[in-house]
Length: 258
Image (tube, rainbow, N blue to C red; front, side):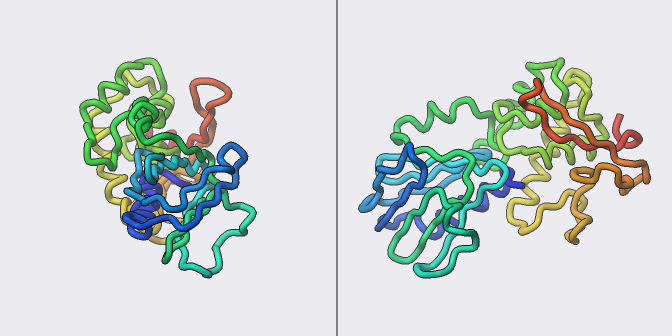
């Protein structure tokens, strides 16, 4: 599942392939941007902001969000793509690379001078150069009655955590995901969030257990009904959110988390 670490890895791959190069062809396969043509423009940079990917090309920004299924691939000219062509939402080519965005949850193009305003709602980026733990703690604490798992996943509080990390962090800190923010010791939780996601920034497979073997990488996420790796108690599974439209899958150990 794409989270902040996944997007930062994608941005790094795209930057290595495209930054400083001139676009020879672009193909936006969504109706709203079908007429956009970036050919002849230079790719200035590619960067991640939380779970958002920002490709700065000429005087425009190609903004994408992977959501649940999205992926950016980089290929050599003529190389076969890993996913079917009908799942491509955008293709950006240079003389020696082809970048393809598949199944992107969000894809838009806007003027470069609008980037700051459009991204202003995001909290501090856990993997960004301007990471500010104190600011993240203040933002989370501003909603004392919200369940901690909901607050951690809100990108306006801190940018980069998805549902996998949210569930795993609550487990690692021994905190029930339903506990109100006001009852949680926030600084060590936010510090742990930074350390865990940074430890996974360059990994091929994300792990929170420290074990890099299939089926053993996570403590609770996706393990509803299975035994807790620490105490053997059955992992519980539910859904949690601010409202019915924002419910997220939630996993916890009723013994290890209080």
